[in-house]
Image (cartoon, rainbow, N blue to C red):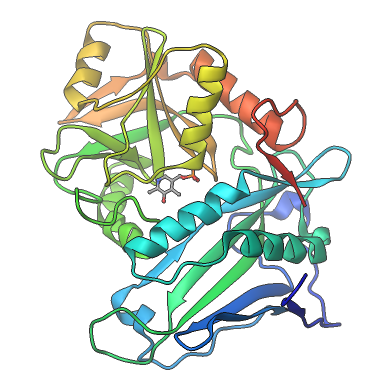
Length: 354
Ligand SMILES: *Cc1c(COP(=O)(O)O)cnc(C)c1O
């Protein structure tokens, strides 16, 4: 590939067994790095042995959080091919996040080609057991060593790879969620729609509270009125009420998930009713109280689809769909994972071979 240099090493790590895989603990032998400065723009794209970033303690990202990232996966098919799911969407979103964080945009096409080279070099790290995959983390950080508050003038773009285990090793189990009115993740006019570390930092406190109370995730309401549902944990959220699929419309404080977009597209492809609109927590609770048929699930690259079996709102717990996985939730999970692992045809042209 033009411009990309590759430096190899002979000291390779031992890949963990598929059965011993966790999330985000093992990293492969190589990293992709590229730098930015105002004179050269993005330059020196290279694949080299995985190593720590050495940086000055004053490096801007450490102090002011100017950074953006992505998360996607490479899947191994039953015939041993390696493939990506809509990776162009991740690079497109990375650039959208860059614009909000005042980071210079990258060349999306070049970056995807570099990622493919990196994965091809790291083939042996893509696990093959059911539900496992190679998680991909592209990240851009501000690198000026400076304590003044402004956008950095230099940046590092890097991509690391991590083999990950099945998200549901013990089966597809509904989670318990906690609705909070005391904390918000993002507000209108903020950076909620960017994939940036600050949004995660902002979510930790409420997440810890939820865990202490015995819930898996927080259901986030909007930051202005604390009335409308936005996301669940670090996933987008869907409701099935009387067989109609509803998800909060993108409003600037919701992260535009690629899994979210894929669920909407697939449901439309199946001629189901799908609506993107505001949905208040009161509407959800009322529907539940009226005994309407309901399913709730979160969507994101890590879990794909995560069924919600119980919600706690204002001291009251509500069992959703008797705490069981809903039929449409299961169908969407099965369909998406079948496409990702090459076990089904790809009706919407989402798969990109490595
Ligand atoms: C990444 C992310 C999602 C899910 O996006 P996918 O593209 O589906 O993985 C949802 N919410 C937040 C806050 C996120 O950071």
